[in-house]
Amino acid sequence: MDIGKKYGYSVHTLIGVNPQLKTYEININQKIVVPSSGGSLHSVQEGETWSKISERYDIDDKSLQLKNFGITNLIPGEYVFILGKHPAIDLMNKRMQEKYELRSLFRSPLCSCPSSRLGKRKHPVAGKVSFHGGVDIAVPSGTCVSAAADEVVIVASHDVGPLWNGCVY
Image (cartoon, rainbow, N blue to C red; front, side, top):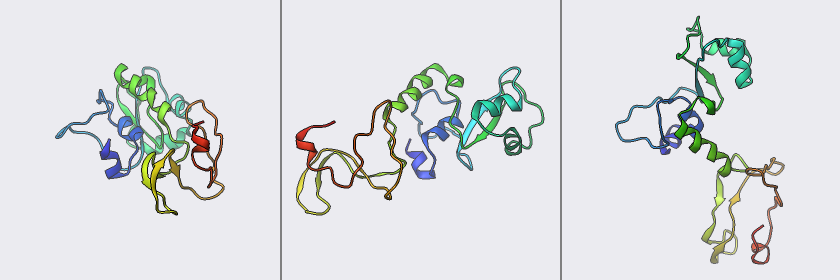
């Protein structure tokens, strides 16, 4: 979703505020919502209260009501905005659920952009063109690194050597 990059929103937000989407693809001239801040729309379910919705998203119910100040009665099928939260997977259509759940397999271990990608590149220090066997993500020293999916971070360093003798761990 290049539109997310253009406006500075994550895929989570664009999917979360556009429940009408059936896939990750948006076509030319298709109308979508681009919100004023990141978050998600929640489709009110039968019997839900502000407290139940705030519990579901782990937010304060008073804050939730303030962000939705024009809504006095929660009506099933209507939407409330959940500031800063990802969409509820169980409220997506089946096809979107399947695609969205796959995102956890490809999440980044850091909230930063790669400074160097896998493949042929010019070495930033030596200037020599060669194959780069990993993805470098530049962050300030002391930044917390998490494993992608259910894996384990093996090393976080500024110098791991040339492909660890040709092996990928």
